[in-house]
Amino acid sequence: MDRQQIGRDAEQRALDFLRKNGLKLINRNYQCRFGEIDLIMRDRKQLVFVEVRSRRHSNWGGAGLSVDYHKQKKLIKTASYYLSQQKSGNLPVCRFDVIAFEANRDNGSGDSCPIWYKDAFRPEATF
Image (cartoon, rainbow, N blue to C red; front, side, top):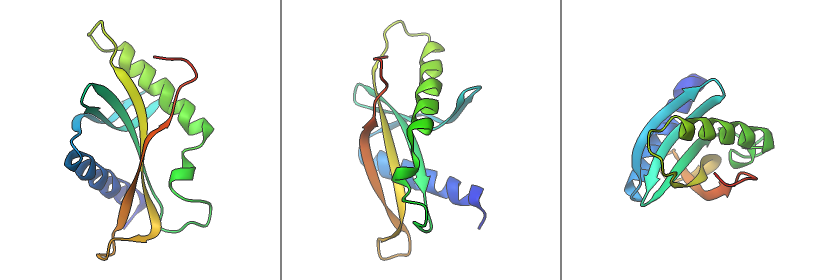
């Protein structure tokens, strides 16, 4: 299986997991000139920007740790652009979550279990 297929599978598993936890899908693979957001979801009144990461091995750190400062800045800029394109005058409360599928964290079926980092990071300025 190639890297893109692994990424798509991880995104689908993350989406299924978040839906089971009550979140509603708004947008998938949102792209603009600043970057991409894997999943945009609603958790009650919050808008949630979700980054999905998967690692088959942890040689360079785990999946969760791969969302470094530079990746966070890119996600924040992309989310800001997304919000600026919305027709609604009222901005919702937003948060950034990370769903990580770590190597060697097996659920018994050979698939790794998701680790959900709610409110994983915040922008320096409020939306």
